[in-house]
Every structure is written in C-alpha cells, then in structure tokens.
Image 1 (cartoon, rainbow, N blue to C red):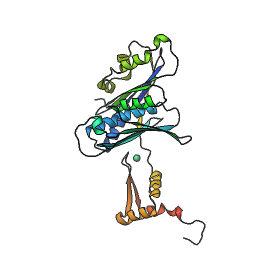
Image 2: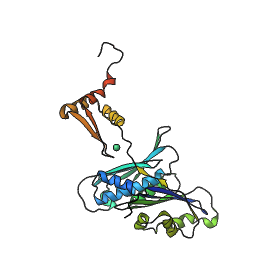
Image 3: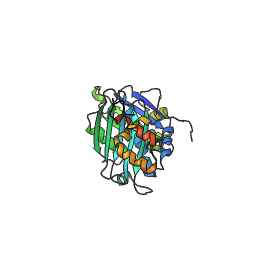
Image 4: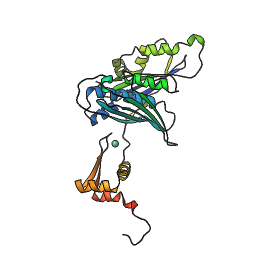
Length: 293
Ligand SMILES: [Zn+2]
C-alpha cells in the first residue's frame, strides 16, 4: 500500500478533438473523512464516489466559490453531502438509518434526489439543479443532471475503495469539428468506459491515459493539490446558536450547565459555558442607556 498521499487533480486535453478531461485521486482526504464515522460498506462506497465526483465538478468552477453535491432520500441512506471549493478544499459526510451489510445503490435510495448547488463568493449568488436519482450509480445520476442542464456534455467514471477514491471526467468543448471527427465524443466516451475501478484507483495518471487513449495525442497538465479541511469556526457556531434564540439556549444551559456543539464534518467540539452562552445575547440588550450595567 502506498502511504504517500496523492490527493490530486490532473487536467488533460485532447490535442486533435475538442474534449477535455480531469482525473482525481484522493487518499489522505478520503481517510480523513472515514475517520469521523464508522460508515457501513455500501454507504462508504457511495460517499466515496460522490466525493470524487464533487472534486471533479468543483474543478470546472471558474470563479471563487464552492460546489455542493447533496443526495437525499427516505431509504436506508438518508443523506450524502460533499462540499468542495474551487481551490479544491473539501469536506463531507453521510447519514444512514438501520443496519445493513450490503445493498445496491437502488436498495439504499428511495425517492432519492440529487441537489447540485454552486455558490459564487463574489456576489453570493447560488445556482441550484435538482434531479431525481434514477441511475444505478452516482455517475449515471450525474449524467442525468448534465443531460437536463444546458451545460457542456459531460460524463464521469468513479471508483471508491478502502484506501482511495478516484474519478475520471470527460467534457465536450463547444468548438466546431470537421465532419470526419463528428463521432469523436462517442469514441472517447466508449474508450473511457473500458476503465476498471481498480485501474482508476491504482494506476498513475499517465498510465490511465495511455491505457485508454493510446491512439490520441494528449496533453497532461501539472497536478493540482486537493485537501480535506473543515471551514467551521466558533463564530459560525455562535451565529447558529444565536439563531436558536436566547430562551432555547438558556434552557440548555439550565439543563446541562453549558452547551457543547460538535461539528458534523470534522467532529471538532465548541464549548459554551454559562457566561459564554449569555455573552451570545449581550448585543440584544437595548443600547445607549448608560445606567444599564
Ligand atoms: Zn468542522
């Protein structure tokens, strides 16, 4: 087993046809996510595939912002959420109910839907797309999303293992092509479909591309690092507690002597004792009366 972290994304281009691609390989950040909860195997597989897919999608975001892929359902798998910024910093988790050893994607999902949100930091705009989970895999369901949205034709291939997750994305560029090349998109997708999960997980990027597209002229770009980091902060937790209201918080303090909030993504604990808790609502006092101390 390779202990070195690869946590990386590689872009590549076909020199002779308007297709670009990305390869992602995550190991250290995958282990960081697995450390938080003891996910049952089928949930882990879907979480991993969603993680690889979200990083691939985030790498197509052209502005400062982040993308979130959320899968919701009322079956055993209730929620999967991965967030990734355009700088390729990610976090994520899954929630499930009941016990199961093995189940297919379809068995885990009931009334599933996939929500893809893209947030632009500059103008706080949020674009959201929702598709029902109809495919048999995460990649198929995302294919549905791309078919329905007016984006560039895009296909993904995903793999999730115990020590790593990986993925391949192909995107057709809008450039016109000569008639003889019309079938290039189908051809490269057909070739990509021959990739096996273990090849995506185990082989170096150059070897994957040689194995799939050895007759094409490709340009492989330098590695971009991907990392796991949670953007939770005491300030965010304070705002969340404030939104619950003073009565609710005082009730918790009466009962437990304080409030401890654990971040669901990274498990970090934020403690608020009696004084901290009161401090949250100090600014709610009427201002400007010097006799109030
Ligand atoms: Zn956190």
